[in-house]
Length: 139
Picture (cartoon, one colour):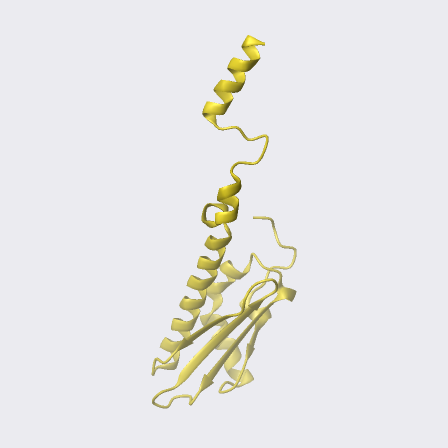
C-alpha cells in the first residue's frame, strides 16, 4: 500500500453527535484509538467519523458509529448494548471488521474482474517461462 501523506486518525476525524457532549469526545477518542491503524491508509481530509447515541443510559439505548471515506460507501455500525462503554467497543470493533472486509473485497484475489483478466502482460507463470525458453532455443 502506498504511504498516505496525511493519514486519518480518530482524533482528527471524529465528531460527536446527538447524545454526546464535546466533553465526552476525549474518552471516546481514547476508546477508538485502535481504529487508527485501519484508518491510516486513508487521507484525513477525505475521512469522517461520527458517533451518536439515542436514549443514553436508558434501557434500549442505541449507539451509532458512521464512517465516510471518499470514494467508498458509507459504513454504519450500531449497538444496543445497555452499558455505554460496551456499546462503544461493539461499534468500534464492528467498524474495524467492516473496513477489513471492504479492503479484502478490493484486493485482486477477491475481485472477479481482475481474476477473469488473468495475469498482466510481462508476468509469465512458471510453465509459460519454460515454453518461452524452449521457443527461444529452437529459433
